[in-house]
Length: 210
Image (cartoon, rainbow, N blue to C red; front, side, top):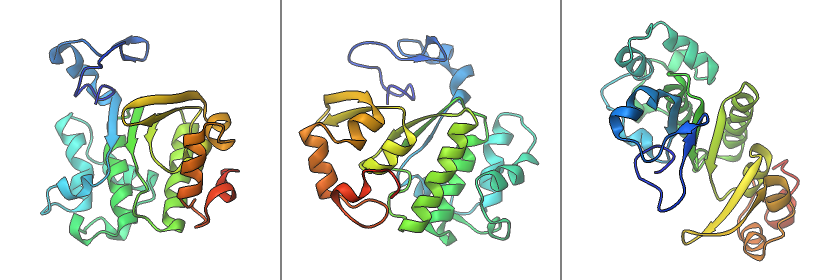
């Protein structure tokens, strides 16, 4: 919420590219909103069901006065199949749906992508491919803010991590150290309780190769 400017933080402040973001009136944030985009869990169901995937990729470009021809470039960038661009949201598989959401988020060339369990519900191979795509985007300079219970994915993609439980910060630090080595008891419990991308539990996913 605070990162997207939808809620104000209870304490502290949020800065975007070094400039104030929280605590500003919406009119002061509006011109910079394209810099922050989100891929939220379950968001595919909120898209207009009568539009094709191509039209949904064109929509943010049209709203912001950008060339709609870029929609096909966006599809290629997120590896969305060209022969599926005529399909509507209800006809898309889980993997294609997540790629469509990511393509829409990238349409405005954001500096920061906020992702909430972006690969939840995908099978192991699709989830791995989606995370590889996020790693590529990060390598190209897009900052990622990833909320997930998948510790292997977090340790692999993120530089820093914060462990939350009931809204309380339990630990914070470098992601590979905090999550990969699972030093905090709560984090160790998560490793033991949840499978990694390879379908195994606990220590098997700690090296981030799941």
